Each structure stands twice: as C-alpha cells, then as structure tokens.
Length: 90
Image 1 (cartoon, rainbow, N blue to C red):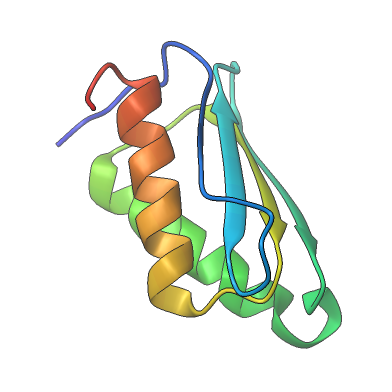
Image 2: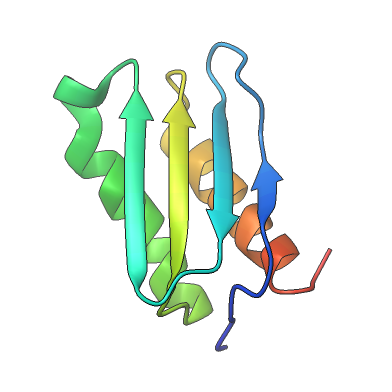
C-alpha cells in the first residue's frame, strides 16, 4: 500500500491514556512527539509511529502526536486512522 497525506486530519482525544494525532501534508516526513511519558518512552512511541508509516507506505507528511500515556496498540490505531483520513479514506 502507498498512501499519500493530501489533507489535514486528526484522530484520538486528549483524555488520559489516549493520544491525539494530527497529520498534515508536508514535503518530507516530519514527526513531532509531545508526551507525558516522553523521557521514558520517546523511542518506543517513535518506533510505533514508524511501523504504521512504513506499513501504509507514507513517505511525506507532518505527524504530530500529543500522548497522554496511551499504550502501543492505541498509538498505532490512532496514527493509522489519522493517516487514512488524511489520504481520503474514512
């Protein structure tokens, strides 16, 4: 699969144990992470995001993450949903 981020989209909430993901078009792939557990889990969060990005074949776009302590599978699901929404899939 090869998805392109063509518009801005969001997924998730700012509730505790969730993650708010915003994606928007960009010339290159940019990932911005803000997390209540950044010091402990920044690498794991980035790894989860990259797994979804690679699986969907996304090579450009800005992905902004505001994590409130979400677990791995929630982060992946929110990133995938936001990317699919931004690529025209609902």
